[in-house]
Amino acid sequence: MLAARIGLQLATPLRRRDLRHQRGRSREERLRRPPVIVATGPAPAEVLLIDEVVTTGATLDACARALRAAGSERVSAVALAAVPPRRERLAREGGGS
Image (tube, rainbow, N blue to C red):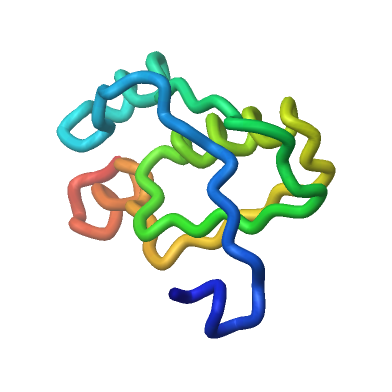
């Protein structure tokens, strides 16, 4: 596990209340109906969220909100990859205005 390799405590204080997956949903849908994330108990004061791919940030935002509501004072996030906004992709591909 990554946490053990870098000397951090692994905690899983969050649970997804809904079973809707974000995969396959449009950006607008992801932002309009973010996942429902709840804390399963008190959250650590400092939290590092790790996400493999950030598309809109809706899931990370929902996690951070739940952690803050459960007592976290500082929530940081790291992503291994991010999907660029549509206008940046279009500009790079020569289709933007």
